[in-house]
Amino acid sequence: MRAFDLGDRGAKLASMIRAVSAALALLMASAAAAQTPPAPPSADVTGPSAPAKSLEDPDTRRKAADDLLGRLAKTEDATSAKRIAAAVQALWLRSGSDTVDLLTSRAGEAQRAQKLDVAIKLMDEVVSLRPDFVEGWNRRATLRYVAKDYDEAMADIHEVLIREPRHFGAWIGLGRILSDAGFDAKALAAYRKALEIYPAVENLKKQVDELALKVEGQPI
Image (cartoon, rainbow, N blue to C red; front, side):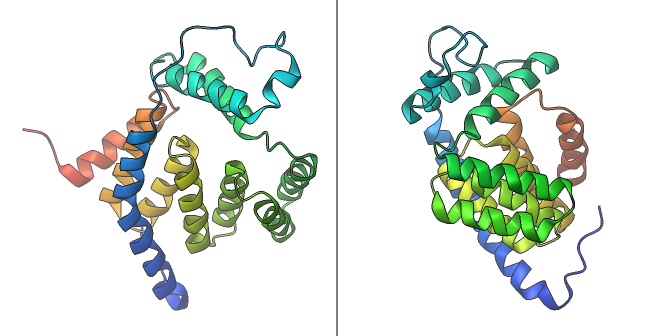
């Protein structure tokens, strides 16, 4: 894949890539330390019969996410895994604040209307109001990536992974930026971390195999 033409912003982007790349080993170590053993089988808290208020409590949401992520790591069927991953993302999207939820929703509407500047400003408010809301950082990272503001997108991804090292979407996003920038080996490490968390993620395994062949060569 062609590397970015860094141009006038090259020094800043290169500096951010070095910073994130240097942090990659630390983040991966943190991710390993943060792995929580899957909870015993229980009722699906994300099911329609579960009381909505049962997920209002942050500890309940965290335990539910831990359980789902444990199942996700062991699920090989793509359809089942996609359903579990969607349930995890739904839990991550709960901020615990009506104001933050509204701002996040409006940012999504602005993105769909291709008003990226408005969407980013709304997410600026979100991360300012709730810096502990992981998905706020992730949504802003996505918006900045779409806006081609790669250095700031990587900064936001870094914030996501500090707070939730098992955020498979953030690892994939980091891999894409590093791969596009020509840092194939580091991109491969990020993609492989995503696969540890979400082994059945659609299309990523093939991409990792191709990148591994490029980086590591044909196995003997």
